[in-house]
Image (cartoon, rainbow, N blue to C red):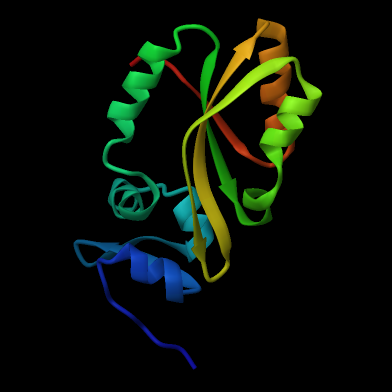
Length: 150
C-alpha cells in the first residue's frame, strides 16, 4: 500500500517515510530515498528543508567561533550516513594517529532507513599526520569537509 503525505515538516518525513519528493512551483525538483536526499540535497529548496533537522541555526556562528578559538590545526565537518554513523571513528583516530582530537559539536539523527548526522572535530598535530587522518576518514565512507575562514 502506498500513502502520500504532504508536509513541510522534515521531522515527520525523517521518522516515517521511505522516499521523499520535494516540489517547488508545482514541479518535483528532487526525489529519492529519504537518507539519500538528506545526505546530499541538490536543490536549494531541499537544502533549506533538510536544514530544519540536520543543522542547528547557530552552526555558522559556532563555526566562526571554532575557527577563531582553534587557529592551529584543522576544524573538520564529518558527515555520517547509515551504519557509518555508529562506527567508533574517533577511537580509531586517537589510536592510529599522533593527533589531538577534540569533538566540538555534533548531532546524529535517525530515519526509517538508518542514521545520519554531522560531527565537527578539531584535529591538531603535524600537517602530514592530519592529512593522513583525513584520508583515513574518507576511506571509512564518512564525508569530510575542512572548514576554513569564509
